[in-house]
Image (cartoon, rainbow, N blue to C red; front, side, top):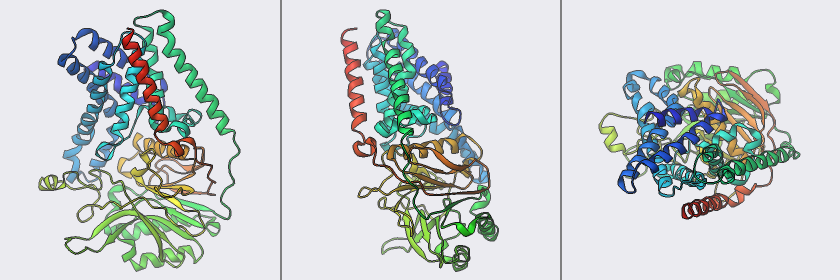
Amino acid sequence: MVFGMVAGAIGSFALAPYHFLPALVIAMSAAIIMLDGVVAGTQTGKARWRAAFAAGWSFGFGWFVAGLWWLGMAFLVEPDQFALLLPLGVIGLPAVLAVFYGLAFILAAALWSRGPARIAAFALSLALIEWIRGHIFTGFPWNMPGMALAGSLTLAQTASLIGAYGLNIIAIFAAASPAALVGRGTWMRRASPLVASSLVIMAMIGFGQWRLSQPAPPDVAGVVLRIMQPDVPQDAKFRPQNRDAIMARYFSVSSAPGAEKVTHYIWPESPFPFLLTRDGQALDDIAAMLKGRAVLITGAVRARPALPGEMRHAYYNGIQVIGGKGEVLDHADKVHLVPFGEYLPLADALEALGLRTFVPVPGVFTPGAERVALSVPGLPDASPLICYEAIFPGEVLPDDARPLWLLNVTNDAWFGITPGPHQHFAQARLRSIEEGLPLVRAANNGISAIIDSYGRIRAQLKLGETGIVDGALPGAIDPPVFTQMQSIPLMLMLVLLGGIALYGRHFD
């Protein structure tokens, strides 16, 4: 158990912000050694499945504790209410997520052989379980092994073909392949996974370099964006008594030199400790900043009056577009809410125990009905992604249209100066590569940035900085293979791995 936890914890250092790829090789090779021991040391049947699950759970627990410890910071924003629950985030969630890795190890053990094909069995099993983890119970595809490859912009270009779930397969197989050198078979057979992985990585490098050498599409004409990063401490953010000081900070940061050229201001997620549409003074002050010519795109909570039979208003976390006269021109509601942050799973039972969501609204947030394009004067339609929504591969565009840019507003101040915001940024950036669309990101405490359709950072503000990002809106490129085919390449890769694993088992 300890060996598995240590191996999993080491592997997490391949992810943002460290991007130390050898750590993934150590972790995945150790996982192969663990499964070799399980299969060799137990008979088939329940004993083997229990041993495989224990090995996988321990590996996953180390992986998720080391990769997600920063979630505990959110429990310390209001320590009087949440500090006692900190173990649920730091230990409880990793313990639950580790169950997925336990199941992956069981599947791998069922397909195991003593030759090099066991690398394919392991990559198939873990990649399939990662896909399930990204979809079941609303999904949580955070810190997947494939994100280790996203640290290299060149290697990350392959996501335009196979997406993040496809990167998982390559990352797991390649990182585990050195372990195949120990096992049954001739030297040539045992070296085959390492040779295959090397060829795939070289192909990825070549493809990435070719793709990044393509001429960039022209920027959207006549547009000057200004992203405002206020870095307001989270413990002060939602207190109504801080309204005037917070708004003064926003206006001060937004009015930095060069404001006369700005056509569109972008503010981060939920910046107001009040409902913007019910505060006429705030809208008047925004209109004064816009001077009748610019537009503000901002995160904002929206309220809908209670319908017949409802006890409360419905509250939506979302984005609003404010015109030059202070009028609301368009809005989009968050579709994919954060469990425990914005809604309580099993709400009736948990509320009876005195639990509530981290974000203090009356009741809980209501999810938007569907993802819709956001219409902004002077800009192409955008696909709005509020915070957490940017982590879901293949789920960032409306079903009926392809907007020409991604807009991600977020507030990661809950997690302070930790790896969490870096991991969030890396995932949002990968969505840009998958979809071939520029990404504009406004974050309360960072990382705010303008990113082109190939994932190249045009301009950014670092985590914990206060300031602005000015720049043009990059143009979109034609839909990449991933956008057009979605999960088809992934399914083909899984079938290939399954064939290799079964072939190796048959001829073991």
